[in-house]
Length: 348
Image (cartoon, rainbow, N blue to C red):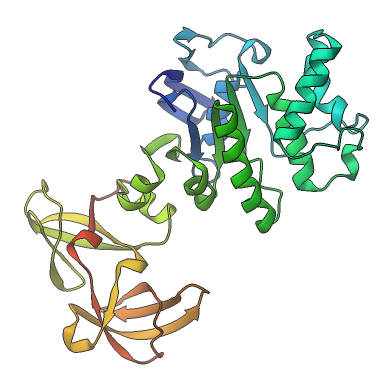
């Protein structure tokens, strides 16, 4: 990744049937970056991808590529290629011919086609599959063919619209690692769409969290997880306890019936805020040592940790711990200043 902006969206507005899909969206994407557009269904992430690819014309706003306005440019004239969720392979062509298809359209010499196709098939782990019929391949193999076909023309940017959605969990995780490896190997820009938070955190250099046609937060996976800017981001990225609180003064917040030291400042006195505490950041202690105490309602074994629900003052806390407590037990809970994230109340 470098500081060069390769794709810039400026004030993009898209409406479908008088319903606003993108509401003046602006976004800079840097060269050689793995960017993920993350959000729930209907948030506008696929529409954003289609605008970049030239498949969707905005009602207003501009798309820039390397500083040039390409808003009116058709898809085939953009240095961009797309991998769709459905793969869209040609069933009557074998693996080699599927990958070679776009090069044949461009009348590329046969020797160059051969070397480019074989290079791409090796890159995606399908060396030796050239003559296989695509209909006999597994979902993961078909996905690799689709990626090789999209990359063979050496686009500057690859767009990926939920490409792993049809794969089972194990294969999806393998392909996440593969896509990251391919992106780093080719050193080009990937713009990836998903609603899967783990996928976004695993692969991305930058995550763009979207909701209702607006960008909620842009940052590295670590920033997005550790420093969510609002309750929506906190809730969408990982699991969270989100409570209403009151900012007594700088570095002091009240929630759960107690006052806590925090690391946040700049709020007005007695301002109503949202308080976010991650389940893994709550320490279970003997009741007498706890800042809060509550009753264990349920315990689930999750493999690496236990997930407990603890009821305290009418709120059900979700807690992740390697030590299990028993349902009905009264436990103490401690939360350090660094584990408390204060955010402005979300507007509906």
